[in-house]
Amino acid sequence: MSLPKPTAAATLQEWLAYLESLHRKPIELGLERVRAVAERLELRLPCVKITVGGTNGKGSTCAMLEAILQAAGYRVGMYTSPHLIDFNERIRVDGENADDAAIIAQFDRIENGRGEISLSYFEYTTLAALLLFEQREVDIAVLEVGLGGRLDAVNLIDADCSIVTSVDLDHTEWLGDTREKIGYEKAHIFRSGRPAICADPMPPQSLVDYARDIGADLWRFGKDFNYSGDRQQWAYGGRSRRRAGLAYPALRGANQLLNASAALAALEALEDRLVVPQQAVRLGLSQAVLPGRLQILPGRPTVVLDVAHNPHAASALAQNLGGMAYYPYTHAVVGMLKDKDIAGVLSKFLTRVDHWYFATIDGPRGATGEQLAEIMRGLLPPQGDDPVTVSSFANPVLAFAAARERATEGDRILVFGSFSTVGPVLQELGR
Figure (cartoon, rainbow, N blue to C red):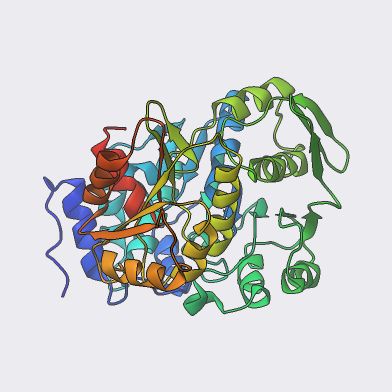
């Protein structure tokens, strides 16, 4: 049963609670409803539009595009999801989160125009972002695809360039249980006759075939664009453009050059419409910020935050942990959704973590700390003289407090598994 429509004095939180109550399903894929409402509202977005999909790396790629394009002097709108702490993080203009009043105005506009059509929370918020970008007359809209591609609300936009960062197993109950099925879903953000960037080094054949069948201009990593580097700098090479002498991105992680090269391939593919000087690339890469992605906080013990929640992302995180300095003990604070491949994620850290602190995530999709702990106990090998410890807690903040209590100054605390795990810890720390 839906809540009453918010009044003129309603807060953003009251509006968001109303949106959550409107639709019978939290996730319902399909473009019919959102497209019908967009037409009623006469949504037009005449700017350059870049959509970014993929299993992992979407947020980083969007952040780098935003920073580079802003450094080049463009007015950029960016839409991403989910958020870590505040909903406003999802909708950005000129590098700043949209304020409550601006978002509420778009919600009210949608509510007055949708009539009898029911929208999901994500469809509603996607329309709000697009309408705000139209109102603010942005030069470029960078749009992160929420789930899959073919039936995701963002796909109602005919992008001028689309990027698929990676294809791996996640959201299998909606997208399919193989890379081929998932690749087919993600490939549907590509458009006929327009640049389609694929940064996955080994893309599913279904993605390649779909791009060919619709006549998209497919740019493949390793074939149409690539990168090289040494300890000091790196270089991008595309079809006709090379950018050398680049400093490494401010965003940490082994895969960030892959994400950065995808962003630069998109800019090369759009260079007849966008002028992006070399200095803007350098400045943007150095200034791109994305909380919760291999984020290392200052101080001791070392605290590492990462929203990794599927085996592909977990493997990259484990690799990055292995490249860090020596720490006597690593403490891991973990909370996950129960529809994720929990065992597949946790197994990547069996040789990396000494003490586990599992946290319950609230909501119907959240796993309890004890459920996670039980899965970990089943994964652990027989214990020797210095056994791995496993404990569970009512929420991520309590789990993090216990980890900080036990950790010494020389240790490392890792917080990962979900936006709903990292967000509360960041908020607790006042970051």
